Length: 246
Ligand SMILES: [Zn+2]
Image (cartoon, rainbow, N blue to C red; front, side):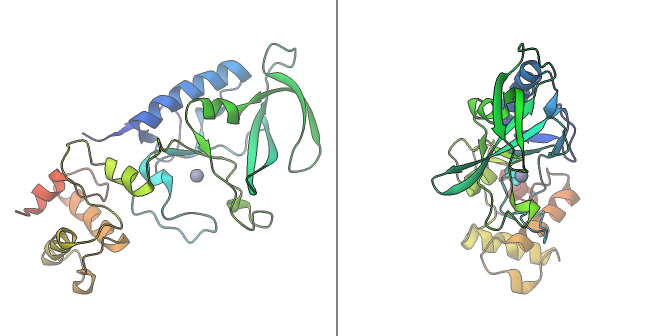
């Protein structure tokens, strides 16, 4: 059973890890009730396939989107008010939503400076604070964000539960309690897996090096598709069994 579950929002792949999905649904409701805007009905991004690589500026290949624990909100909403915040020397942004009702029944009256220029006064809903109350964290903008839109990251929220990225990736197929192998793992079992993929003509011989990289992950995904196992690029007990390793 996969730990990934479907979420109610629209996105190219509307799925998240079940912990993040549960928090997301509560957050969507709170934001809608608090601001009068169903801001999270549509997402710019949620789950990304494990073998997703991009040359697009600012798109991380070791992304939390691959763990099913991150979402990017829709940046086209007219309600958005984005405020610059420097924390521990790093560039963050706080997201407010201009509330649907401006009669004082929603949000709080504030005057803030939008980083895109100009000040905004009105009933604002603090989206960032609400997301943080459900465990979703912001990430800082990448260096050079002033010149490169994709590096701003103000739209990105992730719920990592204190896990490292590698641990979170392993959790994708960790439900069965068996050992799992994924990106950046090394060793003799990885080599065995690769040798088997080579025998199946899914991996070139020079990739049989005991290091689980993106090419191995892609080969695993092809293999998983061919045998009807969840194509997540992570090798757990079911994939091991299908590979007939031991
Ligand atoms: Zn993101």
